[in-house]
Length: 142
Image (cartoon, rainbow, N blue to C red; front, side):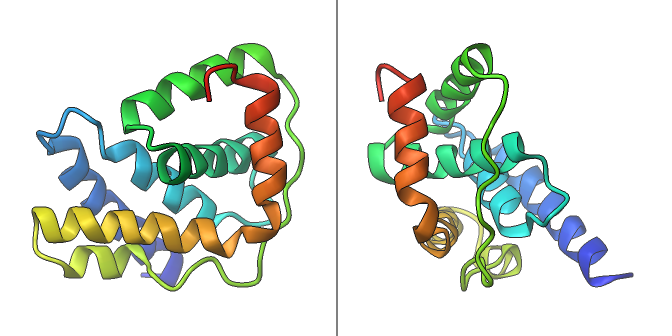
């Protein structure tokens, strides 16, 4: 199994955990965004990376739940059709999906998901102002 296939399999394993999670805030959305941003490459569509970074921004800096991030993505999709190509940093964060899975299920794993999101968001620090600008231009309530 290739490294990217193994990483994808681990992501699916974590997705099973977050989709079955009882927390109504919908933790799953945050892993979708973190994984999309962390694994983006030159072939990633601009909308995918923009939405991932917007989701991380709203979660980490605006305290949005996963459900609120999901609603913001819907609102953004209805307002904007073309998305800027954002720069890919050389490294995408120190924490990976494997690190998240190494934590026991429950509060420890949930906290590691939060830390993973923060690690990925920080790796994209050169894009923070652009992401904030996109949100302020297209989301009135953020």
